[in-house]
Length: 241
Image 1 (spheres, helix red, strand yellow):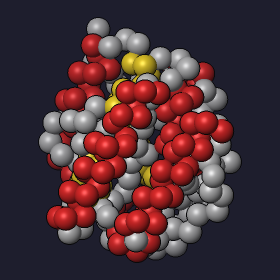
Image 2: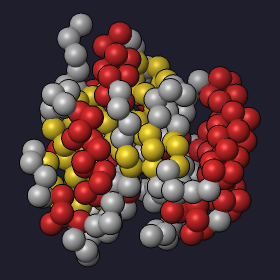
Image 3: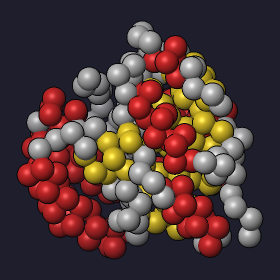
């Protein structure tokens, strides 16, 4: 089987502090493995678009209706690749990330979606350890083994034909639970694999701004709500910068 054609999609709302760094890591680690990089400027009022447009080979698309799922949906409509990879605008992509992605999709025809955990690069080490141990090892991985699917919103790749079958993303979801919604629906059409070694480094600014405990509770509550009720528990979302 040939290597998949990959579209990298980066939703960005007021990310002038991070988008340049994100693109530098992605471009450095992509080599010739990418078909395209698309930044979805999600109604930003800062210099996000101006900064992103400076990078050669990066296409910036404006989505005027604010909302993460609407930005994801716009990326889906714009992308030309066989596999659509989504990362957040504050991530630092590690070397080998694309190699894992290509190998997994190339060797597993039934693979619908691939995801992996976050590593937070700007929080205290004790918090990072706590998240890794309590959330990923004690809660997330056992639940993945039980239900058979899991995805992290800033670190996943999905076949475009699967998204077509899913009718795209659920744009009624504002934020919490949207990644579990993606995984649950994709699972109906193929395997959704959560690979611990498929890491993405990301900012912990939301943890710092909202609090580790509160953030953890919100994610867990919406995770289970999406699994059992097929909809998130939380509605509106206020973005934390």
